[in-house]
Length: 630
Image (cartoon, rainbow, N blue to C red; front, side, top):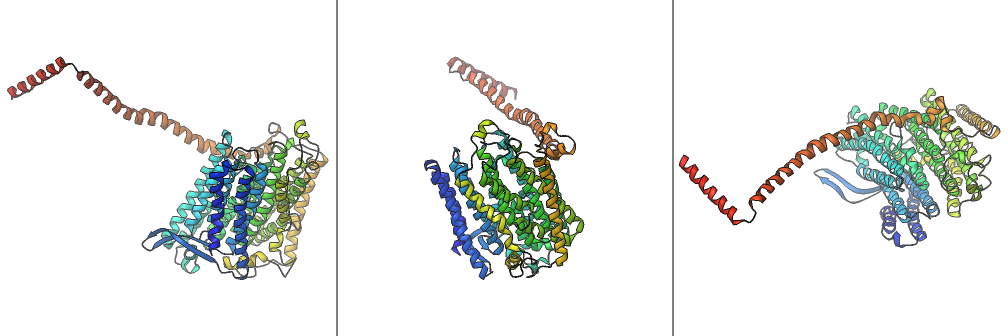
């Protein structure tokens, strides 16, 4: 049980060492200390995972009391069940690979030791979020990863635009966090506890009014909307690409943005009791998935494309949650962590080779100069597109099957969103790695494959992206290991041992449709960008709907015009007139009166005895005169 504490203390120790002593240590030493701190957590997490395979009972340990007031107690307590163990492996496993990658990627940065300190602190807070046994622990980790996100997005703070991107992420997350906090207050009020064991007990939920359950679910989901970048709180995530590429891979692809998915799955007992809340989750997820995919079609910054892809894929997961397909959502969360981390790190390898260039229109023909990066990026692209037998093929098709059982129209829209994913990802792949190089001669002269510390994590993630689907194969392929993840998570989520299945013919028809959509997308992109060798147009050359999508449907401009600018103008008005003219004027007037009086008294107290005698005589005359007049 003490392993639970060491799992979170190891990255915290790495944060302390990197932050306090990293400045005085060689960069390589600092990087490896931080990486090994995460590796220790991964090894201990894997040990707990193995134990839970044979014994599904949750492991719980209480350490001390956070809050104690009458019958209300909230403890600092850690708990690990199979859902938690699965998340721990994703966070620490992929986190370790990204730490190793960062040793090479950030080697020339002067803030190297601070970067690794922030990464370790993020891992610590993420583990608190998923391992806490109550909502207060979850909120502690939730706010902690938000802080780390702010620090890492704005890591290159000398650039004003990057600082603004960090501030935007922080503010938009705070909006969602307020909803989460109010939801936690309602939980404490209604249940008299914040412990998962007491709040998520179906026997106790029947005593709570249905309207209150719905309110709690909607508020919890608002928190998830902020952290997992759903409409309308999604615009921070594409701007968060201002941070170093390892940050994009760790925080905004594989871990932090999935916190909202974890929250809904953890509290699914509440959502099961509210049809309105589930439909709300589903519709928001669907709208987000389609909108982000449309925007991704016209982006030319390689990291921005991947960012909108992340937003779209998170929407896909929320579609699954709204359809009560909790295992399918977790399955796609896992495979997405593999191939999206791979794609971000692959884009970082390209950016590293091109000395910071991120515009795909200035790339091209890189597959020969960077073969490892190309092949791994290709495998990651095929995985996210749902190419048959790759990990994304199985996880996406499981979500589509669950949505098909829920509503055929929604299924068709989800298939359309999946088709858009294929188009924009194949577009990035082909424009970046095929054709002729379109960068500068200096960049072309220095083109080379990235060093081993960058390519080895790429290869490992590529293998996981290809074979990750084995975690939850459908019965059509294997009866013996079918629904492996479902059986694994059933004890933690109290699910039926065997999920409801479509008929084999229906499953086959759905797979055929998705494969046809993938083939059409591949044909379209190949015809346009290989056969015709079209280079994506500049923003000035765009028109119509293409320009609208390139400008992200002007959502940021709408937010600026309707919210940001009025608030800033109101702030300027209150500062210039209310604050400076009235409040400062009133305060300053007291100071002026005091100064005038002191100047007056100063003239009277001038040290001249003749004046003092005059004052005394005048005083005596006034006193005598007053008494005579009485």
